[in-house]
Length: 545
Image (cartoon, rainbow, N blue to C red; front, side):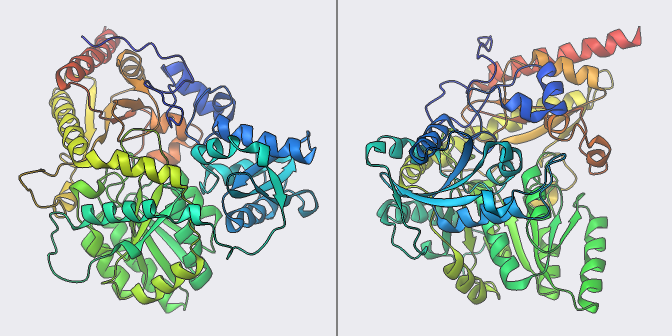
């Protein structure tokens, strides 16, 4: 039997290195508190995903800046590029910014200041009373400085000095190094491995653009496209919640087809036809492959055909499927990935990338656009950790695939048993849309057999059974995927507690628990899951009496 989880609430999952991106949120009571008021719960975390709450090193560097400026009643967010700092100011001062009775931050009270310690960086400074408005820019686009950046610059605060703000063309060699090139080469090597398309144009390392977070690899290309086309962005199928809000809050138009079904494909085609007939531009179609959190896989072939017919960019997020398991680069114009997840694999780095497909009809335009607007912001210390951690990516993915498949096989047998409180498993191996996933699984090699990834969701017949399972499952409760440890998270109950009817219309229910399998011994994992399912079953039995 596995040792019982003893990690304290709000702390990182062990071994909890300095730059851990996890936080343990144990128990259904925490789920209810988080759903009712996320900010109040997040405020109590000792450690958190850095976009949810700035890492303590980032907070310390920001406080050092404020002390240098003599502004004790102010707050600041730190950025490694002037471009991102300017985007933060635009966000904060936009008429769209409303938080209760508070409106946008007046331009007269928000400013950008430039500094240098070990590296150059920019601080967006504003009165502390305005923080509830500004926090949205920190948490959604994910373009703030990393904890490793902050750690490195804290070590040299004796050299902290304010600088004159110059243009963004100033060289910053620490953000483009041989280590960055090595990481790009590593990514390309995985893309070229066991490919379904042995011929034709392939991305090179020069087509890989690195970003400081996975969300930044969506936000930045989205803003690039919006500046060029000024058109509507389509999200096909469900996606991570911050992807939805990013498309809603940035850009000139947004349309959501959240089921990702065949019916949605027909509705998408009708919408594209109507927009073209009315002379309106649809700039891009985005989708996750498969989608978070219930793993619906879109019909990528039809999406590609529709994007071609209606002259839209097709951008696909393959984070959940991952490079090792699926080969979809040739179907995309832009492939985006959160490198934070299974690519890194150790829950201690945040990063993302966007890859341009040279076989795309849009390649020349996209290449010019990216080369004009892209600013390298992924810090060298993060790159170094990513390169080191990703060396065993295939080995880890083999185990992640195996553990997730074994767990879902067990849970599927429960779902097929009318006496079980488990009603459904959401995973490409059993989802009806899994056929679209299997179409793009990489070729099997002696070194690696592709699988379905580490993420799945399990659904129960009522909230009481869900609560019993959650409280009795001996794994950490945290947001993340692709880590060495198995994690459970009440995704819908936490993130959409105030929009349950809306979420339900897209298949998301509070009776679903999102699981990301880790690298533990599978027999111990199965033992723990069986015990938790039995607890849920007992609730069902008691309800019948």
